[in-house]
Image 1 (tube, rainbow, N blue to C red):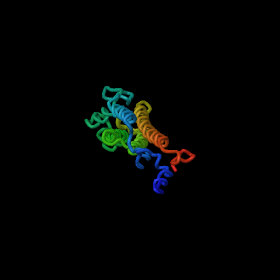
Image 2: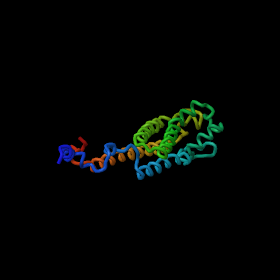
Image 3: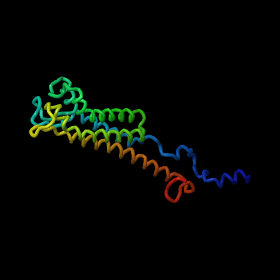
Length: 202
C-alpha cells in the first residue's frame, strides 16, 4: 500500500460518501412542506383584506363591519368624514398596508426563491408594522367620524392587528424551524469525526 493511499484511509473525509463540502451546510431555501405551509399562511393573511374584521359603532354609511379593502375604497371615494384628509388616511392604514405589501413580497419570494432568511426578515418587519397599528385608535376614529376623541363612537380594529401579527409570527416560526431542522439533518448525516461533543460541527 502506498503512502498516499494510507493517508487517504486516515482522513475523516473518506467517510463522507459522495457528499460535497457545500452539502454539509444548511440549505438556504425552504423544503416543499415548509414552503406550502408558508404559502397557505401568506394567502390567509392576504385574504383577510376582504374580511369584515373592523367594526364601527355607531355604523358609518350604513355599515357596522368593514374589511380593510372597503375602508380604503370608501375613504378614497370621499364617503368617510376623514377620508379626504390624506395624512389622516395614511396614518390610519399605513401599518396595515405595509403588512399586506410584505405579504405580497413574501408570496412572490415563495414562488420564485423561498429563502428562509428573507422570509424571516419579512416576518420581523411585519410584526413591527402590525404592532405599530395598535397606536391607530384615535386616527381611525378621526377617519371614520371626523374627530379624535369620543365616548360614544368606537372603532374596533385590534382583531386585524392580532390577525396580521399572528400571521407574521407563524412565518417566523416556519423559517426558524426549517433552519433548525436542516441543521439537525445535516449533523446526523455527518461522520462522527466531524461533529464535536456539543453536537456542533468541528
